[in-house]
Every structure is written in C-alpha cells, then in structure tokens.
Length: 237
Length: 352
Image 1 (tube, rainbow over the protein chains, first blue to last red):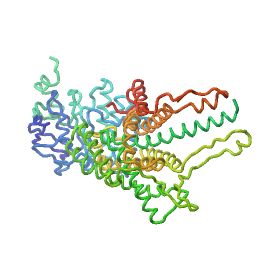
Image 2: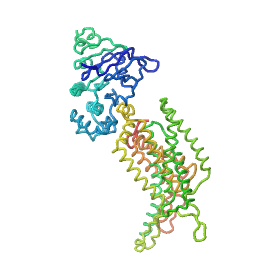
Image 3: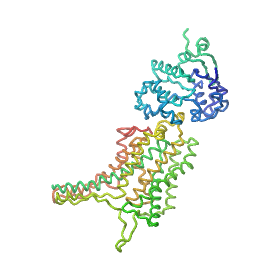
Image 4: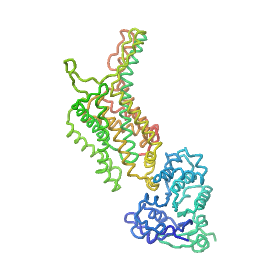
C-alpha cells in the first residue's frame, strides 16, 4: 500500500500562539484517515496547515511522494487535493451548478466531465442545479461543498468536520457520502467531532490532543482501546 | 382644460423631469455598480471612485481637443464619443496603477477595512490634485466655438428634437417638443449595453462567476483554486470602464469641471447601499431610485400647475417639494427609509 499524503513534525499556530507541536498525519492511497480529539487539540489547524492556509513553522508535507510544503491552496488544488472547510463552504448566491463549476476553475475543460461525475454521486444535486446554494438544507449544502472539491478529480479529499451542526439523521448521510466518494479510490482525510462514528469508517485514526499525536492506529483498534474509549469516546461502563 | 394643455404638460414633465431623472440615474447606476463590485471583491468603500470618473472625463476632453486639432469632425456624432475609448483605457490604467502601487500593499499586509477606506480617501485627494495639475481648475466645454456663416457660435450639442408634427395638426395649441441631446442618447445606450453586458459576463462566463464567488466568500474561492488576483484586476477593469463612460458622458452633457464627479460620490454610495452592498443590479436599481427621487424632490411643479389650472389661477411661488439646496439630502432620506424597511438593501446585500 502506498502513502498518498504524509505530514510530519508540523509546528504551526496563530501569531504568538503555537497550536501544533510536531503533529504527524498520514493518508494511504484510496483510504480514509480520521482525526479525532478534544476541542482545541489542533485538528482543524492541522488541516489548514496541510492545505497551505496557515504557514508551517517546522515540518514538511508530501503528497504522492512530492514535497508540497509551502505551496498555495491554488497549487494544491492543481496537484490533486480538494479541501472542504468547516464553515461557509458553499457560495450562497451562486447556483448549485455554478458552485460546482468553481471547483474546476483551474481546468475549464474538466467542467463537463466533473459535473457528470458529481451528479452521478449526488443525483439530488442535479435536480437542484439552478437553485442558489444558500437556499439548500444543511445536508445538501455539504453535498455541494464536497461536490465542488471533487470537480478536479482529486486523489485526496480533505473534510473539516463535515457533520458540524447537522441533525443526527443527516450526519449518517454525510458518512455515507464519505464512503461513496472513497469507493472511487479517493483518499479521505477527515476531522470529526463524532469520534465513534468516524472511527467506524476509518482505515487509520489519529487521536490528537494539545497539538500532539496521542494515539495512532486503525479505526477498529482505536475503538477497541479502553484508554481511548474512556478519554475520547465517552465510553459507557 | 384643453387636450393641448395636457399634452404640453406631459412633454414638459418628460423633458424636465423624467429625462433628467433617467440621465442622472444612469450616471449614478454606472458609478454605483463600480462601487458595489469593488466593495464585493476588495471589501472596502472606494471613495476615489468619483475622481476616477472625473479623470475619465478629463482624458476624453483631451482626446476631443486632439481630434479637433487633427481636423476630425464627425458631426452629428459628438467628437467626445470618439475620444471615449481613450478615456476608458486611461481610466482603467489609472485604476490598475493605483491598485498595484497602493491597495496591493495593504492587501499583502492584510490590513483591516478601515485602513483601505482611509487610503482611498487619501487617493481621492491625490487624484483631485493630479486632475487639476493636468487639466487646470477651470470648467471646459466639450462643444467648441466654431465659425458658421461668419458668426462664432457654440457648436451645437446636436439636440435630437422629437416633434409631434402629426399631433400638432390634430391638436391646436400643442407646441412642446421632446428634447434629448446626443450625449444623453449615448448615455442611455451605453448604460443599457454596459449593464446587459455586465449581466451576461457575471452569469455566463467563468471569470464572471468567479467574481461572484469571490464576492460571496473569498477564502472558499481561494481553496477552490480561483485566481483571486485575476478577479481583482477584472474588477478594476469593469469599475474603471463604467466610471470613464459615466464621467465622460456627464461632462459632455453639462461641462467638464474638476469637481465633476466628487459631488456625485455620496449619492452613488447611497445608491450602492440602498441596492444591497455587493449586488450590481441592486446598485443599478438604487442609482435610478436616487436619480428619480432627487430630480422629483426639487422638481418645480409650478409650470404644470399653471398649465393645468384654469386661466387666472397661478402658483404663488416655487412648488418644489424640497428646496433645491436640500437636493443632496434626498438620497439619504430615501436610503434611511429603505434600510428601515429592508436592512440589507433592496437586493439583500452584505451586512456592513
């Protein structure tokens, strides 16, 4: 199995504040990696640092064996990475189809193919394609956001808390979406608050606390680990 | 009341009221669209927009003088219109130069919006100085004195007189003519074409959609791979083009003054905010509403009153709703009323 994304020794933060203290993350080709951990652990910060939204003070990131440390988000999109931010991840006044088109801004020739692919995964979006994305329900917005990130046919999809603020039923739909995207051999790196559900679909799980790796194992093993369960999964005795 | 009186009154209303409102509304709309686009993309109130309009008018004036000296006369098309492309190119170049040398610096430093606003006020004063250095402090006419039949007369603005000869034969006493000048015809035509073109651009092209995307959410635009720098350039190109057109046609219709568009700045901002900040077609609606409100608030209804009342009944004084000195306040009264009713503006703009 080959490594798709590897980030090591990441140190980053905002201003004086250092949030990541040498954090390490890996995604295997076509597999799902999940980052869990308490609030303030640096989960979202790690995503931003990987995607060039926050400068790394130390450490390096490689993608498909190539050093991508310090590249801009635009360059990373071109190399085959897609990123879905946690909040405000659609263009509310643009129609669904325009939102998706923006995902392929760098490769206009891909728009037709990309749209067909996204509508294939999310048939519900085809019916709503003329509707402004701001008028959609939370779950449908996430479909648009994920669809937008898939337009360039990325090797890796990065999702920052895709279930935040959604109802439990819609949450289940989001995990289905992740699995569906992954079926097409797209690697997924996901930050998730609902640790138990997320680890159930994870090939690899990373438990972060205060910007450091606490546990790294398969999702299954982490779920079975009593220490992890007690500290992070709200284990029922 | 005679039918002729009614017709005369209607044409008077059209000439002095509706056409004026449409003219000033078009100018406001073209300026406010630029302001609202710049606000949407660059996120600051561009106070130098009025002076970009004046600069465009000055360039058009310079072009007109050069064309005249070259002996080029294209009557009935006013020479100023031929100089318009030059004015557009110069204004866009100026806008890009200012962006590159001033605003880009503060963008790179991620300065807060208030710094940009203050900077654009500074740019305004610099531009006002530059405009006076180049063009002097006096007023200038786009229509030159020419020799005709041995007499020196002001070259006509080529008023398009629309007469109703057939009506005249039917209705005795109908004497008024609809008067539209060539610069006004050009203004209406350019406004319609520019706004239609802008609409097509924003809804049909990749770059236009990217502009709306950046306006919606710049961070998301970046992570989508949109080239925000290119969008900024396009914004200045559109804003500069519309400013040059509006400034030139306004100067042609009245006259070029160094203070020409600075006086329009506040009504244009009122129009942009009324329409919903960041919404180009809200700004168009706002521009025409402000133009209409302003014109009709100070419109003297006395002539109509006198025309339509029986012989002997005459108005004692001005019948304007608001004295002309308060004209500038009218857009803001309308603005406040609109914002009470719809806090984000007519077209649901950004919350400031």
